[in-house]
Image (cartoon, rainbow, N blue to C red; front, side, top):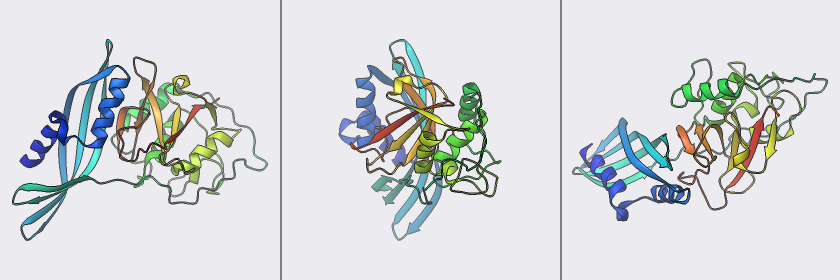
Length: 280
């Protein structure tokens, strides 16, 4: 792995070697009048292929960024999946392996249960955030782990905050999880986005105009390509020195990440956001 150590050293010290996501991250924090004062990381190799004089390796990279903003510090963490090809010990190809966040299930929803009773609840934001911090980089065995896990993770956080489930066993209706079955809104990003804006009972979201209005425990939805298909959800866990949200997420597991996701491989200039206050 010595070649990889040299590669990442060059990424963070040599401007000509910087990938696009790193340039966007630096620009993001410069715009926010902040700086990345320390970067640390570790790699975990989990798959190796050898053929002739070439070796292909896949590994999980855990990165930590210490951000300084005025007199405020916070630690951002995230995991990325990479594939590297080496020939005679030299890197000939190195690329991030994207984990697609497009919904595969039917996103259609019936937002209101016929004949259902109104469910009011007090959202415990502290418990939702505590859960988000506990499981940001691991998986609660009480729930299924999805290949695209962002919405499943956010749903678990809201459940920990006291959001009531309803609608089972109809997958197109309500928001619920039973262990061997679940609603589309529980696990599909596109479905949860529309459920939050349409539900009038139990779990519901109040759409707000700007990220500054969000509180810890609230949810941000992302349409990376701006095509009307919502791809990703995150939960707000903190605020930076300017009062802007820092979020946790699964799929590419992240903690205290700046809410815009400009440093994501999925980001495009057409990205659209929705901001939801939960329980209002």
